[in-house]
Length: 120
Image 1: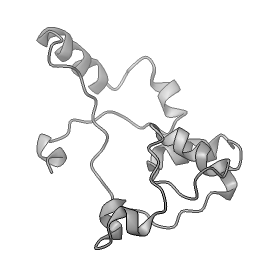
Image 2 (image 1 turned 90 degrees about the vertical axis):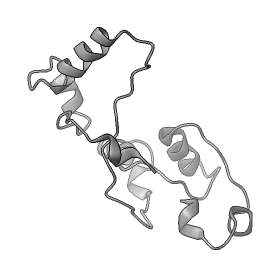
Image 3 (image 1 turned 180 degrees about the horizontal axis):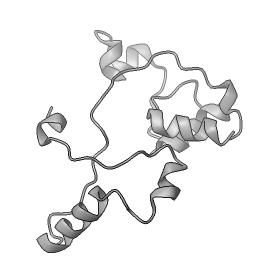
Image 4 (image 1 turned 45 degrees about the vertical axis):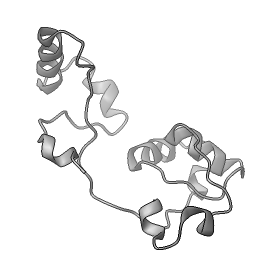
């Protein structure tokens, strides 16, 4: 979001910057009037609106950016390779046991992504 307000520095555009910690917390702060606006991941917003959370119907999207690469699954490099590969393989299988639960959040599937998509 800060890139979108260039050439102004953040303190010249916003009266205050708040690090809420999560997208859901950012939405709560907007809903309760503690902040006026927030940058929210589209998946977080979609799920809040779908579930009718609070004032979700009153949220207004003023700009949308993207599309961006899919969100990666990250595993610490200290986890043994065979465990990482086992998780990798399980997530890519079409018959993942928890698929129905994930679909309730708009999840479609896991997909192999190119590392280059995440390099700045």
